[in-house]
Image (cartoon, rainbow over all chains, first blue to last red; front, top):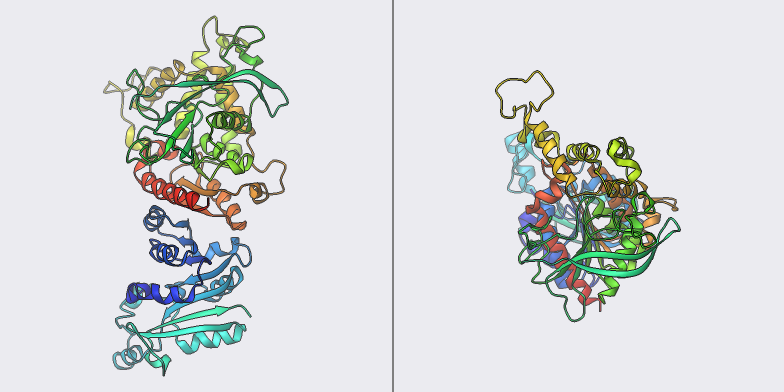
Length: 200
Length: 370
């Protein structure tokens, strides 16, 4: 399940809040370019995207977004250091094969990285697993185990542990349940976590 | 849209070879209206055997080679842009080439025509654009050899282009591309009618030129498009002839294409232009492609096609990755098509949306940057 599909346009407002006016933004897995087009219009950003599905690349270019058609994981190494102010991964860290490599590259080519992911520690996931004895299926993780795009399940605690271990800094974080902010017991109550990281 | 080919004349053109060409003329066509600020001009760059007649229909009712892309509501929308296309230097469709009269003798140059480069073609186009009072083109765009020119424009005249759109192109010919060109050249050179390039008073080397074109046509299609179009179907017969007449549909098609080509193309232009393509190497004199692109500061849109084996996607990706390593604004799309290299001419549906979106952004940003 894509974070963006769950949040609808409300993650635009959220991500928009994190992104300074006029900054250089790279959106990984940018889909049809809707977020970048939104940021170009409302925040005056210089937007670029990476997307692998040809029909989405075409839709994004048609709406005036600069997109590179390619695989996110294998194409980040081409960019020079600090090429962008913000690199966004708003959908797919749990779908990448090597999440640590992707995150490391994001913080090399961007001064800030914005990552949003579905929290596998949410109580509904835990409950589903406990009661059914099967791979959890919830509104946020609706797929059967054999056709899920999600290959790395992570929780808020897992992510923060990695961030600490890598010595990255957390600049901002938001937790969401539905469209509402969660302020306490995030690992249990948040469906979606959004982090803004910096590299040191 | 009835179009008119116009001619611009220049006293001389300095060439990369060190030679100077005198009394040079350029055939060109324009569609749409150049705005007051002269900021909405797009230069279309034709492929190897193309000409200035890119859009509309001419007086004989012949549509331009990219008429499906040029016009109101099309990819190059003449309601918004002034679209320009010129025959290349070395060509035989109105611009100075080996079949043009040498001012020193009054006779066709033939093989006395100096060897030309893609850079020379672009320098002449730049003279034309300047003579029209256009200081900066909104876009330079072309497929195949046209794409090589679009790249050359970006590095040779960086201040004169806002965007460059190479389609199904390369920064340099591979051994395979040079090899196919050489087969074409050898077919022409081996024709006894070639006569050292001096054939304008007699018979043209039609057989050699036709064979060259047949080879070319094979490289422009794909295995799949040939299977779809011809398969193993026989031409006008139920059984094999057990001879060397035309048996298969594909043989008939190639012979037809070859003989048709002879009527409209000059064998010497074939030699000179293929050589210019083979010599083209954007990296020449630079340690890397990325380094050679340092001179460019326009936006790029690079397009390739899945079934194009003559100019495969990896060649477009080389350009795109070199640009990305410089953090250059580059858009890249690989379009799905069965038509092989010909896709850029015939598969215009998806190209149209992409080009319209990209050009609209360029126009917006070019205006905002002022």
